[in-house]
Length: 580
Image (cartoon, rainbow, N blue to C red):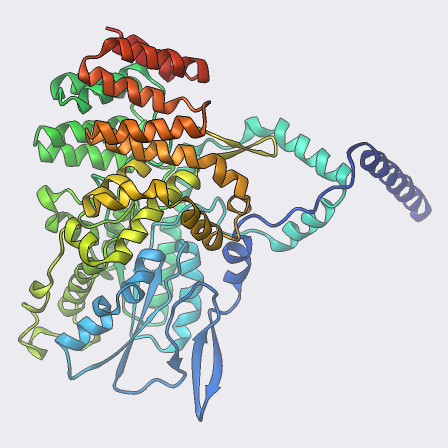
């Protein structure tokens, strides 16, 4: 029996070797496959200790060993008069202490309760989801925390919370064989029809999120550690859905009517679109824009919220459903609760948060961390967490009213770092999402990104000259992006940036067009088409400008050119709509 098995093994192994040699003769030696972008960060390092113990002088301290963590070091033996607070979450929570320390929680607590000592250890990490926060929570319960604050929910984009690293590396080793690699790729392609639909996957992610939050609460209760769960603030007005606009004639008509402030007609178009596509968030987002224009802010808010709730593809931002999970868990488990979503609505114009509070889809301007401090400290006092109460300081009720929030124009004038950050947020939204992988090759998709245009509109409000000046800073931008994203195979290819540059210039022009700055828009459209004569979007932009000016001949002239450069149905829809 053993000899028979051995003979079969020899036959199979010989056939495999012969096939492998044949494949290599025909296709060449296979190229090594790098790990996916951020694989080590997302799936390997998270299973190592977050902190390591070292000795400095005659004291033992814990210091972080996570590459992206900005967590402070702390003494292994906690002082008896110190209250130690840990913060868990992603980049929004991480910036609570690192973006501008003057708005950090420890500074706020120190001002209100000067006779008490606080130690804030912010273990939030850019890109961490609730599962990774849970892994950190499992470790920090051993470090004598007096309170854990959880502000997580913006990064629920990992398909799997945990992967089997042994299986992954074994498969990676086997993919060094060209025969094995091609066979596996063929099987994956043929089985693609069995891939779970995204909506169902989104439901699974909400389930994962809730389970992870519950596990963190269970840990805190088991170790008798107070905990505060926090919702995350949502950007309503300046966060279009992350994916591309739908190619739909009725939707496109609604957008054109909205731009021309024909709100009633636009409403009818979007209602018709929503009735046919009730799960498409773009319909509700632009319906919110319609009600915004009509100054019906309650209905605007309702539609923005619906759009956010349906935006299951935008897993790098919190969702009303994930915030509701936080509310439900905190009530059921009877733990501390900080409602930052509600707080940001209360301080926003017409209760609709937007670019006055947010620099992008989820990150807030530094001053608004004072809202985080106010809501969390209020909960600490109300629940008597850390034995804090109002009698400790008579300034409790007035300390936060001293915060002044600058206008966007003032922010651009006095805070160059904010302007620079806004520039690269808009650029990355175009450059980082323009390339798609198709059959192993990266292909440039010349489509517009509503979010990029939204960010560039904010930049214009901050500093009009900064938006105009982007077209003259190509080399500076290229250097910055390649240095900042050197780990990305996509951005490491300089020629890809070169090909994307005309698309970026188009987005700047489209931003001007939507703000009705037609001369600036036309100039950027000219630059874009001069750099890439095959790009069609600037011709659509020109047609829309000439339509608003009543120059119908130029409308049709530009749409005919656009039609020769793409087979996309939107050009045909524009011809039908603008030709009337």
